[in-house]
Image 1: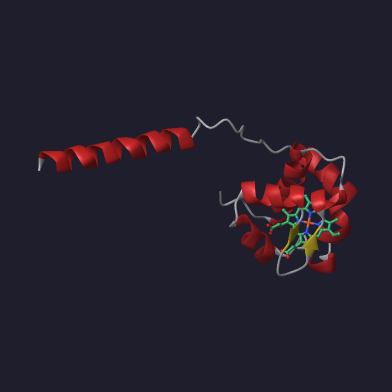
Image 2: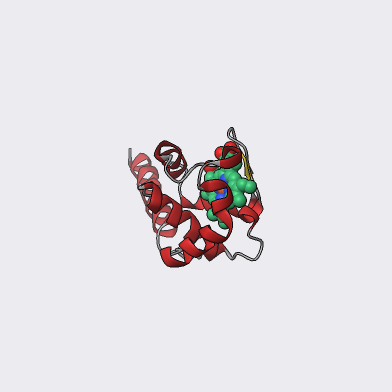
Length: 123
Ligand code: HEC
């Protein structure tokens, strides 16, 4: 009985430590969107496909598609924008063809498009 208590207590402790590290403690810094910059990046690069939905890209007014993307969370979307991504709709080119775009630029552009579509990140 006593050892059982010990095991479950250490289990709880372990979970607490994991939770603490998963939160603010992680080394990765949280990106904060700059929608003005996002608009500029969008107008420079993403607009070619994401304005009207060319080649399978989500159009800016296609809210259900942006909702579907929002489900994935910002980390996944940013990774896909950086590396390129081929899904069931088509092929998103690496960095959305904006090869001089930084990670921040891409994140800003994604945030701008989400904002225009009226959708918020789910995670
Ligand atoms: C040549 C056309 C094209 C350009 C330019 C383009 N995209 Fe895309 N993008 C696509 C297509 C097609 C998809 C859909 C892929 C799928 O889900 O099948 C997509 C999907 C995405 C996704 C969702 C990825 C996912 O996980 O569902 C993000 C985020 C994205 N684009 C961001 C951007 C950003 C930011 C830019 C500008 C810097 C950009 N795109 C420029 C074609 C383009």
